[in-house]
Length: 54
Length: 190
Image (cartoon, each protein chain N blue to C red):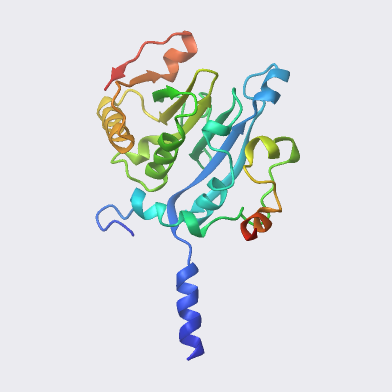
C-alpha cells in the first residue's frame, strides 16, 4: 500500500473500513483509568468477549 | 503441508502499519468543571500505529453522539500535543465544521480515516483533529501547522469537505487570532 511516488503508506477509506469487523476487542493491556472508563468506553473493560458470544 | 497453512495464517493477521503514529486524547467534562486551569484535565488515552489497533480502540469507545456534553476527543499525531502552546501547533490554525448534536459520528470517522490513511495532499501539514461535544451542536476541527501558508490550508479545507461530502462553507482560524479574541475572524473560507 506504499505509494510509489511519495513512499507514503496510503489507505483509502473503503480499504480501511474493511478491517473494522476484524478488530472488535480492546487492545491488550489497555487501561485508561477507572475514572473515565464509563464515560469513554462503549463496553465495560474485560467483558467485551462475553458480549460477543451471547 | 502444515508450514504452508501457517504462513497463510500469519499473512492474514499481519498488521497494516500507518505512515504516522497517532494518539487519542480525551478531555473529561466532569473533571473540567472541578479544575480551574484549562488543559489540566486533558490526557492521552491511547497511541496506535496500525490500522488494526485503530479499529480495536475505535470500536470500543463512545462515538461523539454518545459522549457527554462538554467532552472533547482528540486524535493527534504522536508527540504533538493538542494545544496552542505545542511548538508544532504554535503557528498553526484550524478548519472547523459544525453539525447538530448527535450528527457528527460519520464526519468524525471519515475525518479520522482520511488522516490516518494519508488521503490529504498536504498531510504533512496536519497536526490532528478534535471533536467538541456541546449542548446544541458538535464541532469538528482539523488543526494544521503553518496557518500562513494559504495554498496548503485551502487544499486541506477543500479536500476535507470532499471526503465528508460537507456542503456548507467552512472557515479557517489562526490560533494566534484565537488567543487574542473570543470571536476570531476567519482568515480563509471555502
